[in-house]
Length: 230
Image 1 (cartoon, rainbow, N blue to C red):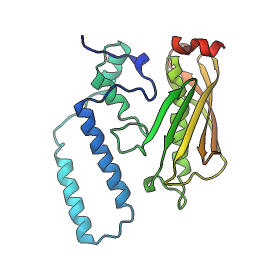
Image 2 (image 1 turned 135 degrees about the vertical axis):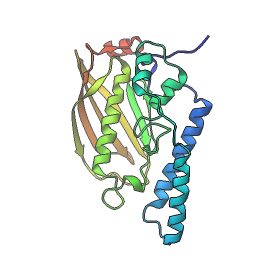
Image 3 (image 1 turned 120 degrees about the vertical axis):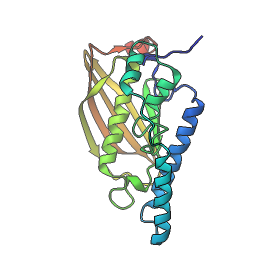
Image 4 (image 1 turned 90 degrees about the horizontal axis):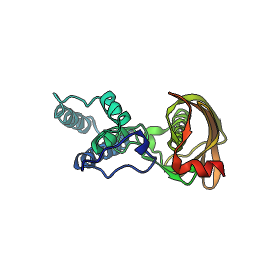
């Protein structure tokens, strides 16, 4: 029997096993991430840098003539409950900051722990703002993604309506950070949530937000309904 997926099958940290194709895509992304880190202010001569540029042009040209799979088509199959495992991986593996097949990931890992979204990350030089610190705009993106994942407790999904962030202290580079978010209240189409970044057991960033459901009201998934009513 062919396995199929729908939007309700998407949960933080519970992706299907990668296909052979996705394994290779993740390897490519990891190599690009490492290259990006090494290139920042690398103390190399011009000849070496020119060789790297030529090599990268050759790598890029290997993809000439290949089209892209349409995200809209994948979303339609997910809505219909007819998406393939590769469809689901094609969407989740390329999410910014959390996608395992995109170089735009630190990586940042998120998962569900009971009624809480938890996560971890470690940001290197490409994410730097002040010396030795993660850029404040990057932190804003982190909190937007983190709080958005509280929607995984619900049927229905939406977009950020309000996001309030308080930077209590700078978030250091090259340091393991912890992430945590939870639902505060649900009222029709509005989902109220809060989250924080923790370093060394101390809150460095706290945030609160309101998400607006794209169609109808937010409804708890059956697996979380009893916990919500307790």
